[in-house]
Image (cartoon, rainbow, N blue to C red; front, side):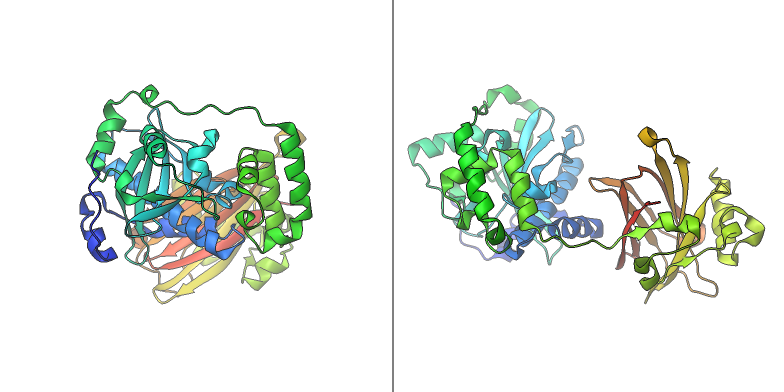
Length: 425
């Protein structure tokens, strides 16, 4: 293990020394990280969660480039669960092969890093390897600056125990981390995951949980303005972070109950449009226009024809609307078409078709990117480098309680985030 202390460099020099592990961040990475951070109530934690999300997305790109033989799974990472991210700005429960990985963001550039204590002390969050990431947001890049195994952490902790700081973090010396990323890859390829034993969760003491819950109820109003570590003791923090139900309760208590703007496309079936859609410039398409080519607006005829060539048939029961997206690169017409697939109560489903086309007499931008997400994951992401070569569209199917977020990126520069579509009849 490389235990040589990192020389005191400024951050740019430090990043230059990490060129081998450097990865560029893409526009969609920033969008996803920003979307997650908006779900965190307090600003300082929001920023840490944002950086950690960028670290995860950058690490995933780096591993795919450097080790295509290693399978990585990040969808279950704790950072994507706002209730956990609200308390612990680290990405636990990432899987690389048989290994559990935890990604951490460097909080200081020199001798010590503030690491949330739960990643080492809460069995459900522990990992075989902890990877420290440097995130340079303005430079749009991340890099691996070191890693440590759970076994090595326990060894160091036994030699010189670290105390948990008041903000529920350990201040871990930089010298504890191995700076050789190739050694990390070697371990992930060759080491047996069982060689690094992880702790097993112990049964919670029911009385402790009850007392903590009673205390949290009294603190409900304060949780919207103060961090839990400012209100609870460290033992109480351990109990909290070992109990998923309390974690979710704290998050709901800390999050102001604001109504999220929605586009209710269920109204379209009654030839109506809601206030949110009206304010954003959505216009209902005439009822025959969606399903009959001869009655369609001129700009939609091209979309309809292109979809037919792709084998997409829009049924007569479909309803739709469009709005125009304007930017310096040109203009785009965004179409949303919907129809009901099944009204059976146990299997009610609806289709959402999103298509991008030109405005009449409008100048199309050079390139487009279309992304569709539900509440938990990305469902569709595709780019059209040359808009003269075809159309860009996406189809998703949802249950009646599902929402879909649509993001359009124009010329890799202008981003339009559309409020979520929901079907409420």
